[in-house]
Image (cartoon, rainbow, N blue to C red; front, side, top):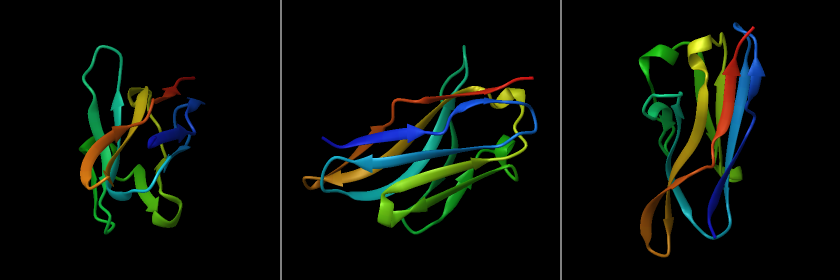
Amino acid sequence: QVQLEESGGGLVQPGGSLRLSCAASGGTFRIGTMGWYRQAPGKQRELVADISSGGTTTYTEPVKGRFTISRDNAKNTVYLQMYSLKPEDTAVYYCNAYLLTAGRWARYWGQGTQVTISS
């Protein structure tokens, strides 16, 4: 069964950094766009950044210049490097990927990893 497994969340002081990782595993598949979303308490889930299979990236405005998304296709893994973290970055971060399995594309989500920015 195909799944996305995230790691790297935690508690960091304002101004600190974290790197999130998300690996796809569990079968034979082709990976399309991968991305990171986040959901803060009481708010809707929002796109943070995504990266196409060709490496084209998009970022939500509040994280531009502070976050970098990248992927390692050989490892089926996407990363989110976060710098200059702010309290408003506190949220559960979810990995997302479009995977081609058994002849059809489907969207998959990770279980989420908590990122807390606090002094």
